[in-house]
Image (cartoon, rainbow, N blue to C red; front, side, top):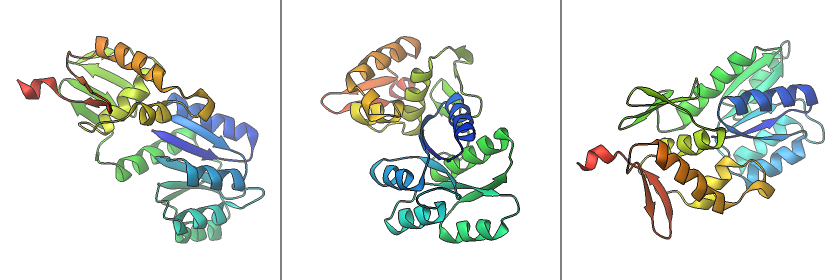
Length: 223
């Protein structure tokens, strides 16, 4: 999943990016409202963690502009504990949930997981395709009940393939979800990661659709 973190306090922003990345997501950070608004308009994110007290352009204005432009990704707003008016205004502006500062990182991650589940086609934090089982809460994968060791990039790639099981995903689309920055993206490296995953997953789990990309299937369903 690709997550946008918008927080102007450098230490907290770093903590959020590190924690959400450690949960298996690809994360981009923004330190002011103008940058956040731009990223939310030109990039596709699965969810946003948005602080309301931002410089240049406040969080409420950013959120209102996104919603007015038809950007409907789930948004979790961060507010000061005493500012109940901000919570109400944020929900009215189109926020999906809020969390008051200070907060425990585990609670933020749990709320983020809930938003992603509600927004996606999966009603559970546990996804399955044949003998492959992925737990988004603990960032772990089992194959036939046995733990599977994956690198961070391999886990992110498999997560997206599992999320959109049966759909053909282009190399560019896969690359955009693995790498947070434009300069890091190289669709050619996707072939390397797909090759590594194929060696670890049941044979036939990842199909190549010539000229289009890849899709995850249950090879047992064809038997």
